[in-house]
Each structure stands twice: as C-alpha cells, then as structure tokens.
Amino acid sequence: MAINIFCMIDYLGDQTKFKACHELPVYNLKDIRTQVMAWIEKNTNFLEDKTSKGFWMKIDYKNLARSAPALIEYFKHVRIPIQEITVGVLTEVMTDGFVMHHGSPGRNFKINFPIYNTEDVYTEWYDIPDDKLKEFPLLTNVHTQQPCYNLSSIHDTVDKLYPLRVAYNMHECPIVFNSYLPHRVMPGPNAKYPRIMLATMPVKDPFDLMQLS
Ligand SMILES: [Fe+2]
Image (cartoon, rainbow, N blue to C red; front, side):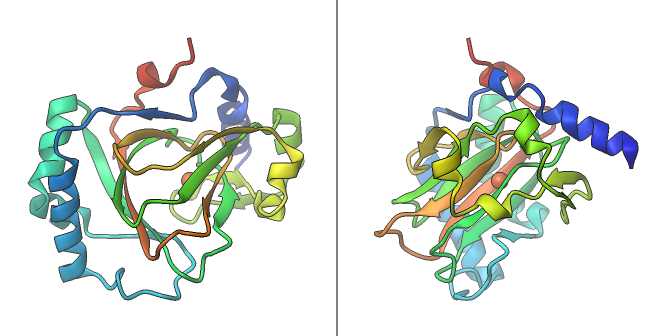
C-alpha cells in the first residue's frame, strides 16, 4: 500500500508539464461515429438509459472493435496502438456533471472520441497545487484498484477555489485527454442526453504529444 501511495504522489507531482488536451486530426470521424452508434444500438441500452450515474460503461471492447473498422483504421493511421476501449455516458440525471476527479496512476492519457450529443458539454481541468491535493482523502479507483484523491467534496465549488486551465467542448475531433490533471465534466444548459464519448487507452502514453513547450 505504501508503495502505491508514493507512486500516486509522484504521479501527481509535476502536473504543470503537460497539456490538458491535444486535438488530433481525423479523416473518418463520421464513419467512426456511425459504426460505434450502430454497435451501441445493437449491444447496449445506453440510448435508453435515463438513470445511470456511474458514467463509465464497461463494454466488450473487442466486439466493438470488430464492428468499428474505421476506429481501428484510424489508430493504424496515427500509429498509436491501443489496448482498451470504454464508453462514457452522461445521462439526463447527471445535469450537475460527472464528479471532479483525477485519473489513477498508470493511465495518464487517453484518446477520446466525441460520439453523440457532444455539443454544450465541457471537460474542465483545474490547477490544484500538489500540497492541496494531498489534503484530500484517498479512495481506490474501482476500475484500476489504484489509489486516488477523492475530490468529490469540491465538485460544485472548484471553479471558485482553483484556476481553470481549460474548459473544452469535445465535438469535432478526437483528443489526447489528460486524466492526470483533476477534471470534471459539466453539461451546459443546452446539453442533450445521453451524451456519449468513447475513451481508448494507448498501450504507451503519448507523452510527446502532451508536453508543454
Ligand atoms: Fe476522467
């Protein structure tokens, strides 16, 4: 356990080095969306789900990958191998957003794709100093079993407490997404639900794309 905690603090210790997000060029987002939506309609209840609050939906991602060749072609094109795909769903009971949090160690950067109802929904990354982060209670990320700081107590107030780094509406292209920095997902008044994004995990973190010059 002690080793994990040290890893985590180190992981969060130099957050000023990296961008919050980096837009990737894309040539086939329309095809990716069409194929992913067809798979979602056939294999999940995400489009009918009006009550889930968990955001992350575990899926049979190998099955999705077989049904979404445009997604696989894209990763070949950008030469970034991925190892996992998940779906993030913001349902209509989540008008207060998806809770302030940070990614657990080992997964710094994801490549996320806007899929459905992506207008007027913003990911907000905040600069919370390292010494302040250490004052938050710890929790274990249920997906990775890694320790994280529980930032839920400042979900509603973080904008008054800490500087906003970026508020980003993911809608026109995939992005390299920094889950290293504390962030929340906030719908605006014109958001539509369910808002669906696809998160993919590169085999290796693309640090080169994310370094601030
Ligand atoms: Fe996140």
